[in-house]
Amino acid sequence: MWTVKVLGLGVVALSLSLELIGCLLRRLRPDRVLNEVLFFPSEVACVEHIFSPSSPHSCFCPLPHGVETSFSRLLRRILSAASSLDLCVFAFSNMDLSRALVALHSRGVTIRVLSDKEYAAINGSQVGVLRKAGICVRCDGSSVHMHHKFAVVDGRLLITGSLNWTLQAVQSNMENVLVTEEPDLVRPFIEEFRRIWERNDPTQRRRPSHQKPAHVTTRPEDR
Image 1 (cartoon, rainbow, N blue to C red):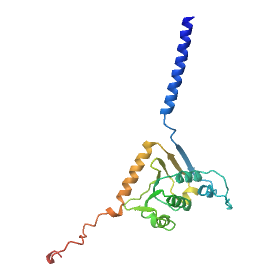
Image 2 (tube, helix red, strand yellow):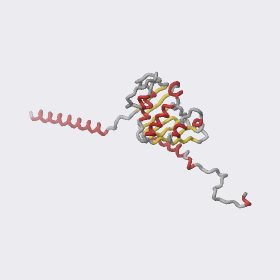
Image 3 (cartoon, one colour):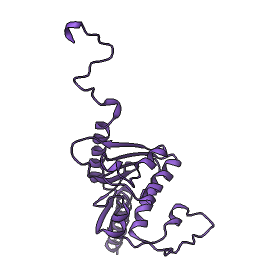
Image 4 (cartoon, rainbow, N blue to C red):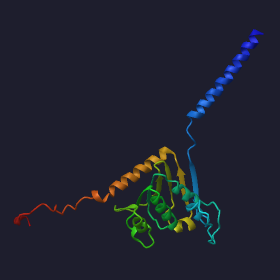
């Protein structure tokens, strides 16, 4: 009888130990990391409710309402920014995406945008709209196209893929977007943005070698 009691107590102790270990592991285990894939072209639907979720007025446009699409999910990820959003994109002409950045800026979110110098000047580019709203935009001045398409939200969420921020890409092209919080993937994009941003700092551009500083005087024989 004594042996049976000892064995019973041992089983109970083992069960409690395993339960405690399980609880400890669950506490130590990090929250599930977000990984999401979006494919385009996206179904065309109204996105007004995303910009004004608490508005009591319904939108009366002819587009489908209450439809979850790749584009609406992309907008939600962008508008989730609470402190910062760094965008590096070759082509930017989509007015809804531009509206999202302006909305974030008005909420106090720090927005930085890098674009290609040639594309920024074409008709339909939203670069002028962003600058007018007070958003800092730098255009890459290198001899090659700045062809990146990625955004980093709050320094922790990466949005990247083949998608240019244009209406054509969203509604008519076969494109892909990866949304991830994997730190090992987010970190290199943060560094790449920093590298290009600093390279295109207008205050750090070198004076042409043939141009003499204004305070230097020249002798007649040097002219």
